[in-house]
Each structure stands twice: as structure tokens, then as C-alpha cells.
Image (cartoon, rainbow, N blue to C red; front, side, top):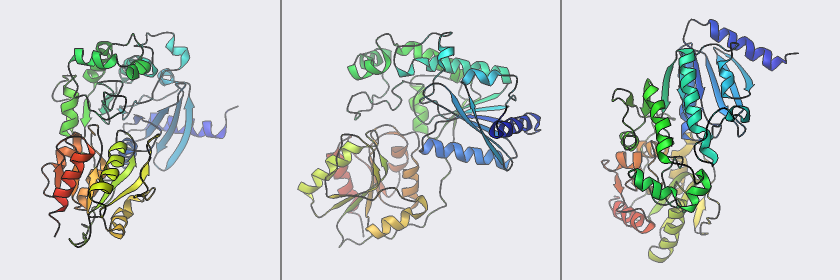
Length: 397
């Protein structure tokens, strides 16, 4: 007997199949963050056009959790895995938007039919991209892929080539990649039989099949092109639209107030947790009058911030300006040590005209280095960050 939720989702899927406006199948990840914000915005746009959307996320066992959206109707469903999308009971989607495949895998029943690449967690990703390609052919669909990280380049998709997650690899040639892969922290992830060549052959076929590879910044395109050379017309540089309305510039405290640095967001190791810790320790010695606040949360196990750092906890994006103003913040630091593909926080802080320092990496540097209120640090270190912060803050009226 079919349960009510299943009946509802089946009816919605039937409506999508009969719809005169092209429907969309969206591959996503369940966690919150910039990539998810982007996909939800795209989904809102599709629905506003009258298109139906099936949004899918993948569990650790390869099972899919889906939500079906059409007009003002919504329903949930579950599928045993990606192969079930070939079922005759499902409609043919006209657009397949691959927003993020990090963490995606194949169900155990299907793994027996394909060959893995390597032995670690990402071993089924090349088979997964091949299956998506077959699905595109099955539906005769348009395929769009959005670059939110660098999974096509390397299973270590933030491209930090040391166990401490501090150093961007720069995407060397294949010989350089193989040296990196021999490091214990990489071997434990991908296994000793993994080769970067096999990984990129599969991804090259996938990217070549795409109708559009959407890069949110020129820097993300440039990193991708270090490993691949898809047709130029396929890659489109389309910056993400702001998540919040345009904000009124902050009124900064005057020179009589000491420097007050804000680091905004959920700060993980790749987003600079160790930089923030080391910066706080440097401030205690070099500039004890200065203050450092984490407007957000710390999500880096094993890293503890000194008591001198105020951690506000989660914040409402619409109230970010009020929070920064009430704290008396004078300058911001984008502490990310990997080449972010876009970074919404940078966009938000620039709209507030808060002076910003970042490292010479990725999309934040692409925007900040030519901005009148910005400066890039000379190297990726807390010392270099502090020097840039002091130089930029000295311009304050």
C-alpha cells in the first residue's frame, strides 16, 4: 500500500512529466553553506518561471533523498540510488543541474557493476560521473555543472597539499600531483592504487559533455583550466547574486578607537582557523590594545582560540551590519587558505565597505586586490595578515 507522502510525490512527478515547461533535476549536498545557498536560489528562479524541480541529495549508502517542487506544491521521496532515475516511472527532465557532488556515492548493489578508482572514500566518483552522462543521454537533457570546489581537479577538492591544511598546491603537473598523493594523509583517503590521471580522464569526459560549466569567478575558471581544457564556450563566468539586499556602508569608528578585526562566518581549517588562532596570539604580544572577534563559529577540531577572542556564535545575515557596528569593528580579515571559488562573506563585507584583508588566493583576492578598501597579504601567514591589517587600518580617518 502506498503511503500518503509517496502518493503525493508520485502525483507531483506525474505533473512534472506532463508540464509544458521544462523541468529540472538538481544534484545537491545536504549541508548548509554557499553552495547550498546558491542551489536554493536557482530553485526559486526555476519555480518562478513555472518549472518543476526535483532536488536530490545523497546519503553515505548511496540512497537519494529528494524533494519535488511544482508551483506551490511540495513533496518528499526516497530512491535506492542514482540508477533508479532511469526508471520508466520517473519523468524525463529537460535540465540536469549538478550543483555539488561532494560526498556522493553509488549504492552497494551498483558498485559491483563498475570499477572503482582507488580505494578510499571518493573511489566511486568517476563511475558516478559516467552514470550521470548516461542519464543526460537517456533524458536528452541539458547538463550544467557549477564549480563550487575543485573536485574535478582532485578528490582533495580544496587543493591543500599538507595534512595541516594550510598550503594551496597551485595544481602542479601530473608528476607533482603524484608526489602529493604519496603523502600518508592522501594515501589514507584515496588508497595506494589511486592515480590522478584516471580521475581526470573521467572528469574530462564529464565536463566535455556539459552544455555549461559555470564558474563564479575568473580565478575558479583559471584553476579548472590548469587541469582541463573544455571548449571555451562551455565555461561561463557568472558571479553569484547577493544573498541579501544591498547594504548601507558601515560608519567606522575614528582613529581614537583601537583596531578591531572581524573574521566572519563558520571558520574551519581551510577557512583559516589556525591563522585566526595565531593572529590572536600575535596581537597579544604586538598590539594588545587591538581586538579580534569571530562573528560566527569555530568548526575546527583541535584548534582552540585564546580567551581574548570574542566568538559571537551564528548570526543573521540581514543583521550583519548591526552586529559589526555594535562591536565597533574597524577592519575585516578573510582568513581562507584555499582558493575559494566565490565566497559570499567577501561579497557581503565589501557591500558594507568594511576594509578587508585576504591572502592572494581565489575569488576573494580577485576582488579585494583592486578594491580601494582592500589589501592582500604578502604570504599566507598570521604575521603577513597582521602586517596588512595594520597598514590598511592606518588609513582610517
